[in-house]
Image (cartoon, rainbow, N blue to C red):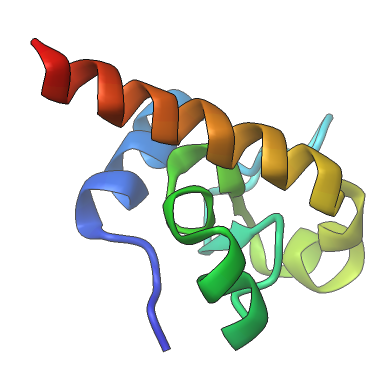
Length: 95
């Protein structure tokens, strides 16, 4: 099963200054959580979004266990991100 690249993990760590993304939690990040679950179905349907920083949040172990559902995105949101990322790639290829 794919996971986030080291580049994405580091970007999330840097963006969150190494601390949990849950509001009012000041514990260091323990893991990078997929907002949209990393399933076979989602890997086929949203290949660009699934492993992107848009689908990631750094959480401490407690918040990952207790609050990760607060960060979930809908399939509609995932579709919008996927379309955006696809358009971005196409525009880069045109240059």
